[in-house]
Image (cartoon, rainbow, N blue to C red; front, side, top):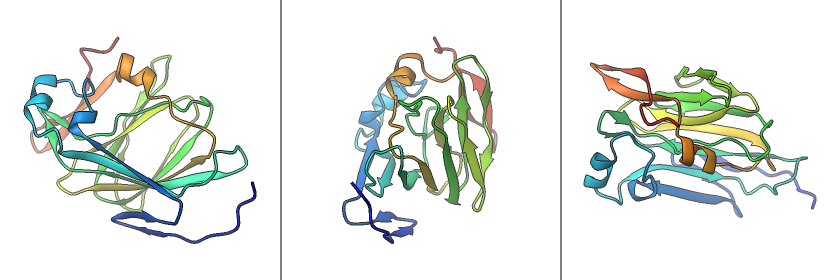
Length: 186
């Protein structure tokens, strides 16, 4: 399949293009992701945690997928709202995120234990190398909006994170945040 050039709108409410997709994740979709499961279960299950919009590019190694991720403000216990996080199914595929608005952290780790948690502000980009699991964490009181791009056939491996979790967590501390060890990490 050959794509023709196209233009789509990228804005704070997402990405608009015919044939694109949008997915939302609510608290009910985040069982087992947050450290304080009792706090998550006590909250409104329909509360939106994040959404992502994709331009609908075919999953081919010759194409670049791109879209917008919007992580909402909020907390479950002391943990900030975040995406589930994933590795890529094609493990060595990299990804780039560009912060459009808000303030957040790109929490990353490798299977051998290396980790990073850079903070992102509008106009900053983070390069996520191949082989690094990653999740966005909103540490502000407004939506954390990023534009992402990656090889279109890279896919997502959510299962590894669902079974093991991340080694580190981002929690509220005073007026800021702290990176702590995850006591449930396996």
